Length: 301
Image 1 (tube, rainbow, N blue to C red):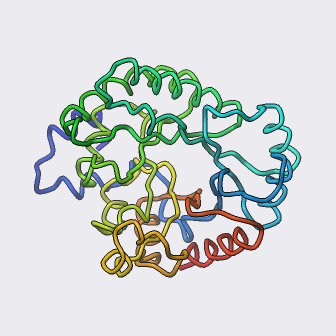
Image 2 (cartoon, rainbow, N blue to C red):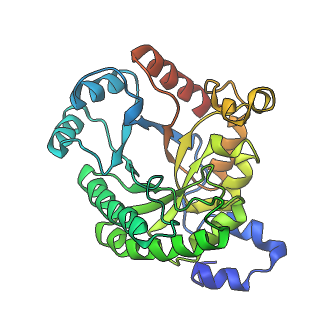
């Protein structure tokens, strides 16, 4: 499989064998991990206790978290962030682009798209400074005024403008699956990544976001080694059916319809080993401790 670039490989792969081929880990990759998810992170905005960055980092360290992801660009003092990181030992494994919803790369206005491109370049530099490895990016939004094909083409054109900075910094662009009406199947998601023919772009897999219309373990096997990081979230199909689709997220970790044993098994099969980042409603010490404990439970499922 490594004989050809990914794009070339896809051209030579028949539809009947595509799913298996796309889900095969890269040759030379480490074998299945016993517990593929073993490092715990959360989003900075979830920490609602503590005034300073240091106080917040100290809190999550006490609660059993290994890392935290920040939005970028942000208004935080980078020296304060680095000092808090170094004092507490809390890692910053990656950042989340803070402009991709307000100024999506699929927008018809090139000036709007340029804002997101500029923000991604800043985020890549910030991530390098923090010592992380990925910048999470929602690549496009499809709606009544933006056609699917337009979103696909525009977003790829804009991401190609960002890739040189990714290569320069050594920080990877991690595309996330969200409810943006775009990249709605794992086969298409894999194709989207492979068409860049670059090792500097991959996937940030959000487990809970898939449950409404699919099964996370299926996506994991298809995306395979393209998965760079994993977001931890829950979803309830019962609440979706009874109360509406957005209510499906209003369930605690381990109490929804995410089949965590199946997720862990699939992650182990593709050789994933590393971070899971909680992306749920945050709160005070008590709430964050509960999230940390529940992450331990689902990690071991």
